[in-house]
Length: 92
Image 1 (tube, rainbow, N blue to C red):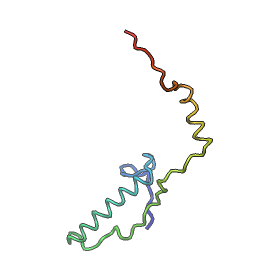
Image 2: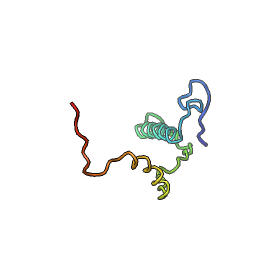
Image 3: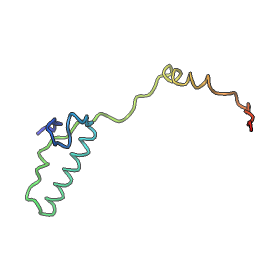
Image 4: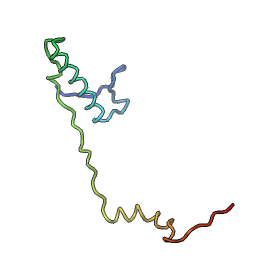
C-alpha cells in the first residue's frame, strides 16, 4: 500500500503543512517501530505496518560547486577583506 500525504483536517501529515518526504519517512519509521514492538511483545497479534510501502527520500548528498560558482560566491567577500598585516587602530 503506497503512503501518501493527505489534506484531511486533523491529519498529522498533511499537504497543507508542506511536510517534506524526509519528515513523512521519519514518522512512518516511528509507526513501524511501534507496531514491530507491539507485535514482539504480543500486545498485538499482527503488524499492520508490514503492508506499508516506504516513502522515497531524495539523496542528501549535495552537488559540488563549480569553480565559477565558488568565484561568484567569494567575489563580494574578497572586496571587503583587508590585506594581511593591516591593523585598524582602536578609537576611544
